[in-house]
Amino acid sequence: MKKGFTLVELLAVIAILAILVIIALPNVMGMFNTAKKNSFNTELKTIYGAAQTAFIKDSLLENYEGNVVYSRVNNNYCNRKLDLTGRTNLSFYIELDRTGKVVKYYASDNTFQFKSDSEIKKEDITIDKVERLSDGVDKIEITCSGIQASCNKKNIGDEVVVANEPFIVVNSDCTKTILLAKYNLYVGSNVRYNSADDIDLIHAITSSDTGYGMQNENAKGYVSTSNEYIGNVAFSGKGYWDSGECKYIGNGVECNESSGLLSKYNGSYSDNNYPNVYDKNYSTVLPNIIWREDSGHTSSNDYSVSYYVEEYVNKLKSLGAPNTIEGRLLTQEEAVSLGCDSINKNCNNAYSWVSTSSYWLSSASSKEFIWDIDSTKKFSENGVFSDTNSIGVRPVIEINTSDLL
Image (tube, rainbow, N blue to C red; front, side):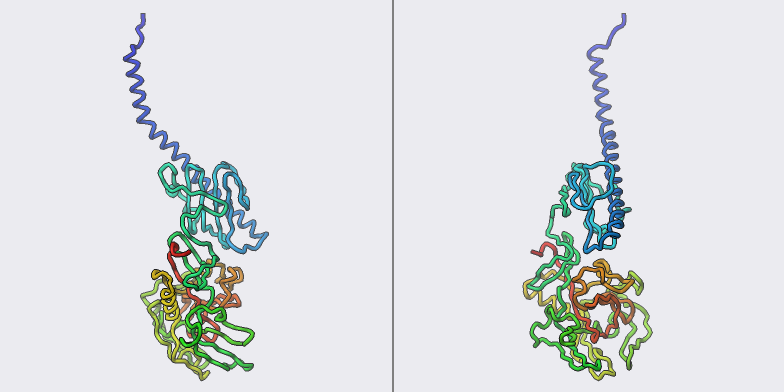
């Protein structure tokens, strides 16, 4: 007669099996979760690729006025649809700028989530950036307009007011917002030309003029009703960012040989790598360089662009703006991100507010030329002494996003 297991022996076996399960379960669950995380990451890349494909197709049918968004919330597309297969419980919001770059990307399936508030490439979507909600991360709530705002960040093109002065949002995240003045500053000189294209009137704008140093809607370059150029400023004096000194000789510009960009600036004079040469500490008076020497007109009371910007920032602070704001000029790279074309030298496809006036940027293309934008949508380079070309000062300020209303 065979003897069966006793109750004690059965309990012992069950206990051993339970211990083995307890030991193995975390590894099994870990493998399961990793597989799900990998699947989620794969779908992120699929959506990314589908959005870029749709962007190209849609661009053949319409001219984009702004950024393009593809979004789906709870299995319902908000506007534009993507050609997707696979899970439908994954909500996403993906935003592309007018060049096709993905500048915002959010996705969630209520188990995992992914969030990028800035430009991201497909190869940047990696599993280590996927968050598991059960790990206690801040859950994002995806809507048709993005995610529920966890901060006061603004959209590109939004108008805001700082110390009663109007600005337009160039870029914004939860930490910092970059603002472009809506109008040029009323500084520099006013110029009028007669029928012979000679200078007929020069008025040096000084602190005694109403509105001096602040934004002025009329200070935007050429005014057709009066044939006058308002608020023209030379960018800088000689040797500002390069050891090659330049000055007007006769009808042209003559520069000494250059040993290159000054060491305090980074970059080189090459495409897509134009150095930002804005220097907040450069406030030198610019004697006798504003007008060509052969024109018979000179000025001994004008300043570099950075002087006017820093003076403006100090005025804003005195009018109640936060003491943490910083002033500068728009860069060539930022202008391109707003739609300007550095190849064809125009801003035809940029936001309309980008070219409502003529103003200096802060990116140098050589020892004597600086990028600028003008009110005819030209996007090119100009000699640093040029204030007879209707180029003015349109400041940029950087402000803590939390300080915006």
